[in-house]
Length: 106
Image 1: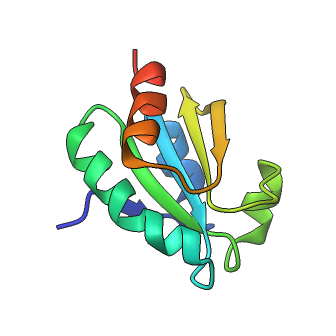
Image 2: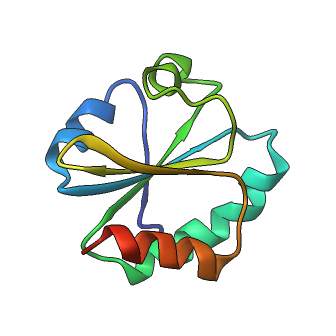
């Protein structure tokens, strides 16, 4: 069972406001690096129960991606109390993404 929530224009603000820490994976189904990173994000979500993990298809919800100035994917944004705290762009190793998450989950 997945721990990664599919975001949409209907639930984005609700999830954002209800999560102390929120990791959002901005992706698209045609993006090969995004698809390669999907299992990594799923695995990390199982290890970090204090963080809400979610993904947003930028093709379907461009207005939300634009709101956070997402121009390259995959892009990851860590929100703290509904405010973007930090971001990363591009596919990376599981270990590197884990370190980035760990540095922000204190």
